Amino acid sequence: MASIDITDIRKNYGAIPVLHGVDLTIRDGEFVVLVGPSGCGKSTLLRMIAGLEDITAGEIQIGGIRVNDLQPKDRDIAMVFQSYALYPHMTVAGNMSYSLRLRRAAKQVIAGKVASAAAILGLDTLLERRPRALSGGQRQRVAMGRAIVRAPKAFLFDEPLSNLDARLRETMRGEIKRLHQSLGATSIYVTHDQIEAMTLADRIVAMNAGLVQQVGSPLDLYDRPANLFVAGFIGSPAMNMLGGTYRAADAAFVAHDNSVVPLGRAYGCADGAAVTLGIRPEHVVVGGAGGHVTAPVDLVEPTGFGTILHLRALGTDLKAFTLERKTAQVGETTSVALPPDRLHLFDAAGSRLS
Image (tube, rainbow, N blue to C red):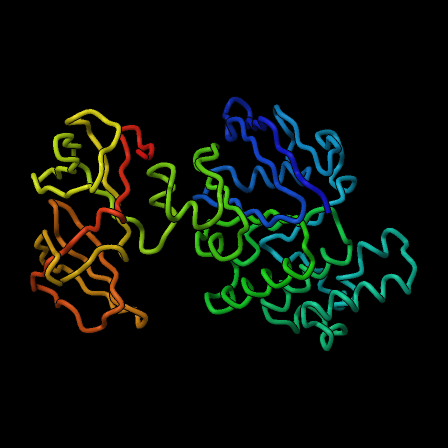
């Protein structure tokens, strides 16, 4: 395995820039997830690491070796694509061993590596089947097995679960995580699904519009988002965002309807400055004696695990998530509290205020 160092990487398609100077280090054995909306540049960056896209400027090193001008086959990486890209006329064993046979590896070596990968992925009894006789999840495991047998310096995953249904994606997430724990392989995983990012990553790289917005552990991004983009992208249901101003005299947030929310501490911004207040739905306290805002209930979404309430409060729409099943009904009015220790404050530019 090896570390991957990305220094000031830029990518232009003609006169159109899509990556604007990305700096990132993936440590040896680390599982890093690139997450962001469609068009943010995450797949382009992955393909540049793989050698499938030319580098406009900057440098990529794999294991300390500059790979800018190396062909994909010479970078010693393995890539798992969104499409399984299996050869339909080959068996599972044939697909998994194809790259080794191209390299003219000894038959005993090939058999041993295929057997080992099949055992890890639960494909032992399927080695003689062809892709048409496999489920979607089994085909994706074959694609991963084809990568494992090569024992590369790094694994690259390009949205490998996006073609699977929700239940199978959940199962495959667990399998990929167990696989990484077993192999300890340096891995970069691209997804637009923030649940995949949160559950799989050692570190998340949140990207938007060709720029890295924040790098950190899943809980770093969840608990202390660096800006409004990360705050809104990470978390489901998404964080509530309320526009208003900062009142320095008593360290309070004043909403557009003049409702006041105590912040619990002073922030380093001027009195009257435009700010955005954020709070996650699960941190909104519904009912109880401590509520300081009244809120009519517009919509109730039971999830089984809990209930999402759509409220009208502080002059805007507000979501609250509660584990209670029997809670306020549509048309009723409830009390709402926003605990100061659960609040996030962002300046007019969208950056977090510490």
